[in-house]
Length: 591
Image 1: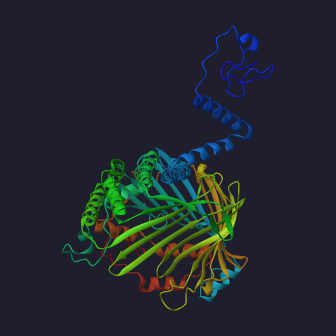
Image 2: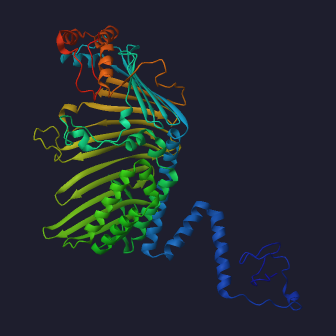
Image 3: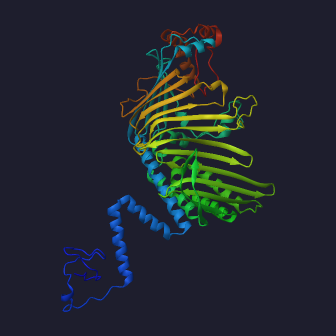
């Protein structure tokens, strides 16, 4: 039997031709062919294409989808120029990193943005007897203090934000501070119930202020220097709908500018390469991207022009503060004008990119060179992360012609997203500007990661232990900071310890819960409210406060002797005369 389509011999019982894939039904033997017209033979090119297609399908089925995709990538890579292949890999790398980040960011944003939310954050600190003994040498006796706890309740209902910070000690309430902000009506209130049951009206924080109005240059007699602010910027700090950018807008901005950078890489050459870090080596091809002064200048100009005309970015900045956008566009205009001025300096860039057989970037070295009348200056940024099985090495270094500025290096293992390893940030001693050898050359920061699980990072979940220490400061060489934690966006916990050797001197247990119940911290119609800008109101508020009673209460609950400080207050340390400056919260002596 022969195939009617390509003429290949068919085995008895075969339903499909193994060469061209044509159905074998109707296939005829030699004798039968005499009475049947012979079909016109297909062009060899078409026959070869079909054979290749069938072979590719068979290869995928036999060796698996992943290997089949690798074959397709090999074919695609062979058909591309070095520049096209580099851009293809760079774009894929960008997209993978973008998805991981935006998945996490999206869940983070969801946890803050909405009509309502509430969170309960608790931090409980306990000190060991060793730590208490060290403090006693400095004249601070806290042996009776079992623990200190800070509890933050924060909630939102529409444009209304309620916050309550409570300080506790030895499991007793010590001090509470309540704040309330209504962004829609530009109202703000403040209360410390242990000092006074009355509230302070702080709504003036929403007023627009100029630097001259606050630093005395407007002709006023005040010597106070304050930082200018605007209600728009202040409100954006609380209004997460404005402050946290829409996920789609962030994606749009990121892709626009990374696409611009990637497409400008046209001068690309391939050479032999490889990647090594901390004794871990991995095979890789090296792609060399170069840009001269003209190309870099054109790139920077296009970036600046794109930024200036970016409607998405404009909407984001104006949504926070319109004045900020005006300053932003003015700065861009100035930058574009300065670029047009002639300069004798020449800037060039060379980037070596190491790409492994899976089309992943495992190394990148960028060299920026500036040639001018004063000679040549260079900055080299070197990043490498090769893998060998579960083992990996890491290098991140920044170097100039004067020497190495930064060198972070280390190695570890990664199994299904769980990382174990040790990484060191070295210093050559140049950070010690005081000359007192506070920081010597050596290991400025040592980071040890134990069972740090990033496999569910995109879902907002993580767990593991990180230990920070240093060998560059002799006084801290025996100490370390240990952080153990786990959780997600809705509920998490961590334990932070300051260690001396293996002993925990101080521990802090931190927890966070969302979706909790919280009432408003705004004053009711029956509460007394004082205007912070009214001098007579502030005198009355000052008389209501009794700091001495509060400190005596804290002393009793914590078992700390404040007699020295209380004596100073009672003998005139605090004046009962009204304060002249009501721009800040007054402290009174009680009535």
